[in-house]
Image (cartoon, protein in one colour):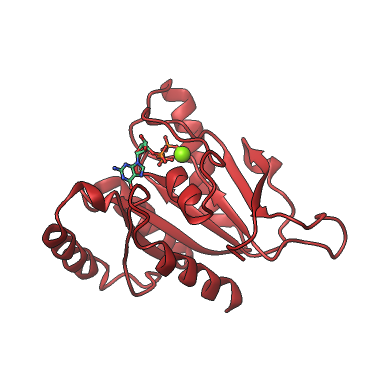
Length: 206
Ligand code: GTP
Ligand code: MG
């Protein structure tokens, strides 16, 4: 699945432009600038496939990526799709626009039957914040499976990563839809990527 090239197939600005529900979907959610798009590029070893930026608010639509080589017509559907999402929280964009993305993200997370799992990305320097808690509440309530991924672990020392892993696991203990296991990653150093690829494959297969 991850050995072949992937392609961008669709940017979805609002719910009515979503593709018909079909192959299993795995989405990447998290605060603006946490590293969602960078992690997708690192996972697929395709720099520049998902657009990244220093400026929070880069990704503005639900962006669909699928393995290449499927026509998408009739029965010839890709085995899965990865969905990059706009971030929530602070972004360098007009409030009205940010509110619209946030609504899109929340509506999608709550209402997509083919959404198999959400990877909720947490910046290893900051840990889980209030707006992350709100998203986890929503996923627990909607019974949508999610797994936590720490990003940018290259920016802190290994003992600090260990400490955050333990503290985060404790915070998730009473959350019903949390999939056990937190994956520590760095897109910069290509760390934790095999674990994440394996987790995604198991999700899609299961
Ligand atoms: P939005 O689309 O704006 O919500 O952001 P995003 O979550 O998609 O983040 P993006 O991938 O665009 O990355 C934001 C910034 O963080 C960029 O400057 C990346 O280069 C940087 N970044 C992402 N991942 C890592 C990482 O693992 N390590 C380091 N050091 N920087 C990273
Ligand atoms: Mg992005």
